[in-house]
Image (cartoon, rainbow, N blue to C red; front, top):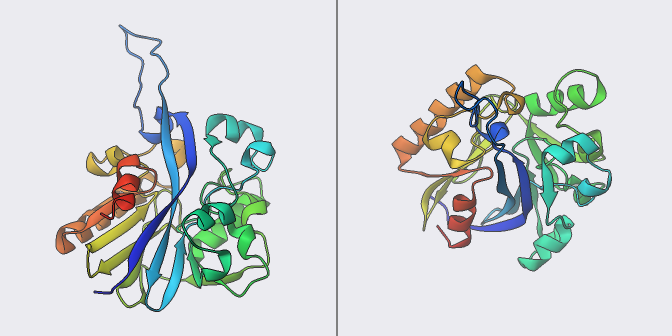
Length: 264
């Protein structure tokens, strides 16, 4: 256990077709061949982990110019992100400066999670990411294959990358990284053993929202690199939750952001 605190940083709202978030959420039937589209709002948030050994930023959110051409127009239309501000401004509102951040943990490098990395360019701040994620991000951004949600402009920068390897990594006292492939090849979950709150698992986009986790409903196919790996990673997180009586926080769940804001 470690005497660390979690400070959530609200980074705005993404609005998207619910079928992206929950596979087959709105399906046509013989009786209703043209069901009405459902759009759902979901928060984008980061977390500052104040640990005795380091002040850590969990993810960096979207680039502040996402609506002004940094994101491709078709992606922005599908995943409209409102409330965009520079990472520096959102951190400042929570009482932090970029210079206060000793380490960044990038759960993955999709455009709504890695867009704030510009703030750490030409610094010595370690950027922790799984090797599989870094490789796939460059493969996707630099070729016509892979995943369109990786933008070279987010991560192809002079950054102090610190790749991690394998399935588990004890990064600091009371802070473990867990490889959770499925949404992407190198998604990282963070398991925190906290003095006050007990075990907290920042699962990131292993589960976009609570329905993905609680009901075992996968995200839409466009948000899954591997359906099979996603189900295996879901079992991994549920096993950790059961063994440690943990609180699991999903990547874009409003209820989980509010719980973090309330101090769990």
